[in-house]
Image (tube, rainbow over all chains, first blue to last red; front, top):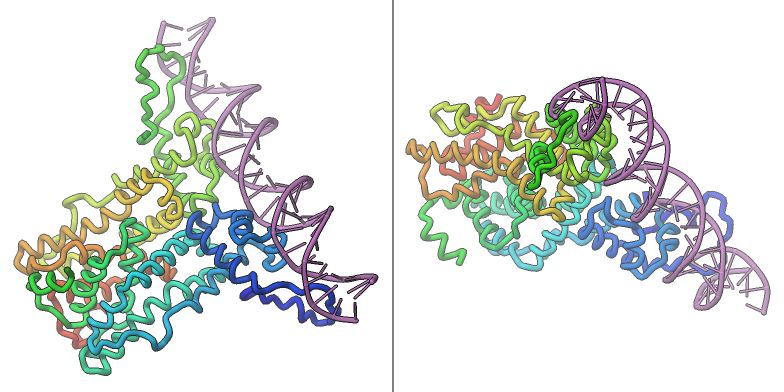
Length: 223
Length: 223
DNA sequence: TATATACGAAACTCGCCAGTTTCGGATATA
DNA sequence: TATATCCGAAACTGGCGAGTTTCGTATATA
């Protein structure tokens, strides 16, 4: 497998002593970014290598010098997204679980999430045929999202806000599952109100918080 | 739009008085079933009309006599699934919301659901390009699932088991969203234990039921 | 019975796209 | 400076698949 176009070619077992111009690896990120763009717009099957090349203002031969096939290019492009995830720290710490979860609803984060889901939609049908793509897609899209919620809940447990008896794994997946369903199936935008609904009406009650169902109190918060 | 291959051709405004052998519409369901099979196995882009024809033991010309294009064939095939949904009644009525939800976890229903999700996975990337397909997919996959949960919750409200103050729409989508996420993203099977988890650890608490988080009590029920 | 049409099977056209090669020019090693 | 390799651009090859046509056969109308 290749990563960031760093193949093992230059370190071939018998060193053939490469001279001449060296490969300009500074272009790799642009090519991978172009790949993700086209992937989000067209999906894997309708994406052509020519589209990627012209979007990246590169020659098609340049792409094939770095990745052996369209499939490998896409796998690398998706794999390189997992670096762009949330830092383990650098996350909000508001003192309450609800505060932490609501703080994650910021338009840049949400737009990034919708973009990721568009890419996911473009490769869903290919995932069942490529275990390697399935793995990197999981690491790039699924894990980071669940990890954040899991982190917040864990901290709430340590804080004594939430009982440790709850099924943390299942609850941590509620938010990513609901947003994915909304975008991919319902084809509706992920609005702030929707996220508030998921937090206040599903996640927090599932953890034994905010069972008060006087809708009045919440309407003020979400407005 | 055509439905079940019943185009408006034979009733052309000026009647050209058709004689000769008549089209055998009894084959339509087999062709549509074959379409769904190949769609589930290959996805829209890798599915070829030849595959569908040979699977249905029909000639490719026969398919094109009935549907003008591959896209229309697929739209019709998906549209014809919404008939195969749950009857408005004929649903379990156990007396409790939990009993109703658990009664829906039967292997035939679950296998059918996974099959539907495979088909959904095969057309996800096409949905953003075809509003017509988006509509029939919504009616075939999304609505029926949410409708059942909604029906159960509504009945529980009328029964006085659940307060009407809860966000019914959001909660009704939890189960379909979680199963879709599990199959399409996590690529894990939808087990009985998983569904029990979703019901007991998310849906019921969200509706103010079963807040008791002594894991002991629940483990007995789910075993 | 004659005709118009449907049928399955198979051959055919035509455009698209993955992957390769070729070109003139740039650039790093030796 | 000579050479090997890179670059973007563009032409080329080969296969595949949507949609059409053809053929021999079956069947419903007139």
